[in-house]
Image (tube, rainbow, N blue to C red):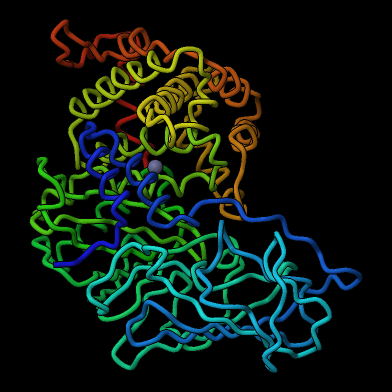
Length: 502
Ligand SMILES: [Zn+2]
């Protein structure tokens, strides 16, 4: 069975979080990812252009992993001039074992930004050693396979660069990389030096397949897995098909999926088929899923974590303090897209939405006068993820209904679809207001941005009951949910769940 490299404090937190209701899995994922991959999602220092010459630098990386895959050596060579300094891609940057040195062995000074290169000679190389183990990177199987991110072993130049990378692995090992290839020298997309990604190294099962026009590279790390490789292919195909219902095609044309089997004995609670997931964008879209060893194909196929993670790709990476928007949209679409794809029935989806709002409202009550933005910014400290996720979901629902009931009807699907190409070109993170203004541009009217500003300033959980009732989602006094097709907005409710005609 695979061992997960959680540090003791993370295990404690995992157990604590596992005690929370089902709707918190993604929140737990974010927290765990944050702890397991401490440099994972932090914005990096701003890039300062090199004086005088604005042409991109040419940078060649060569990364050599030791046989245990937990440590290695990075060499960075510059064709021509070097940047002013080397910086972390995210957060702390690589877990350096020692100093960064020039070819002749000169130790380069550190600064608050990273490593100062000073007046490095043209065509110079620098090198350093790194150690992943101490950073607790995600998962390993006694040296057989490893889940890591390139920001754990790369430093990025402080100026715009054209980069290539060669990965040197032990002879038994292979690599699954978000930017493709097998580790032989290949050019790196700019996002690989801006954001973390999921990289699998070692001995693992692999399946490359096409699903609804998306090239999928599936890596399954060692460990028992009842669902099997074929079952995973079918489940992932279904998830891609579900999210493709938003605008007739999936947000990206290629996707890396890394599945890490986890044991049912991870804690004492009823196991969920997918314990959690995390989507990343560095080097290309990649998603990591922790799948229970004993989960059946049917369980995995119908579970909501993968559609949630993949729905994040409908928006650009949103500023962490505005997580209510990104998590809200993903929480909305995890339900909506599964109904559209036949993975969940409509009544169950609405019952889950009602339940999520009840739990979110309970969190909001605990937080007193904290606005939704403040709650989003502090949710990792307060643990009030449900308020943020479900307030954001309530925003997505209210926005979608508002768009669909205008004199010239539109929908969230239509706007996300129209602005998808713009969002995909976005590098780095985007504030919620900018994302909503972009959607308003597609609409041709300022609707969502003002609505979002008001929403994020709210100190209470939005009252969802009146809207749900108008949609024909009737909640009985015992909490059970029935659907009323005679309700004033029943047709809108059905249209949301039917999706656009493709
Ligand atoms: Zn999420």
